[in-house]
Length: 179
Image (cartoon, rainbow, N blue to C red; front, side):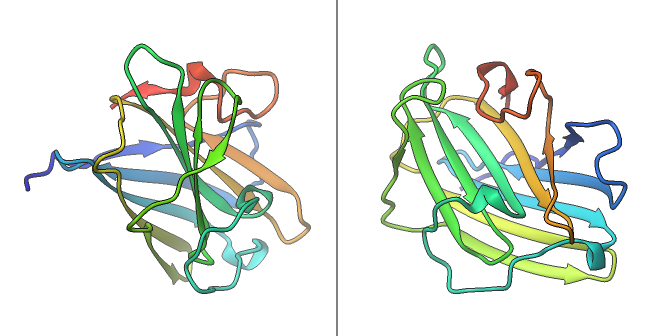
């Protein structure tokens, strides 16, 4: 199975200052022809000032976005607002949801093969690698990438390819870009 060349994206903080703790947040996306997404989130920061969830057994877990979490949204069909939302945590926990429309009828997606999540940490950065087999699930060539980063005080910083609302809203239809 051949892959396209990986694409690298830089996420932007919702507020211009972000935390000051995070220097950059990049995402590398590789989409093989048959629908297996490979993502690598790289967070460059003073890691001693962030709350990074402890590693746990990989499993579906709700509300990961309340702490440090990395996200991908994928449109299902070209002319539809229906989409999937993938949340992954440095804990290696994950969640996949489907929505019929903007914030409408969210439901958990049950996968025969759960995402593979691998977390590594270096002195000034962390990497979260995700491999998600979406073979058999419809998806269009539009996506949105985002992250929530929690500092040591419990404050959250919201990062995305683009922010289109007056408050952080990763689900907004205008947040999706062509792949």
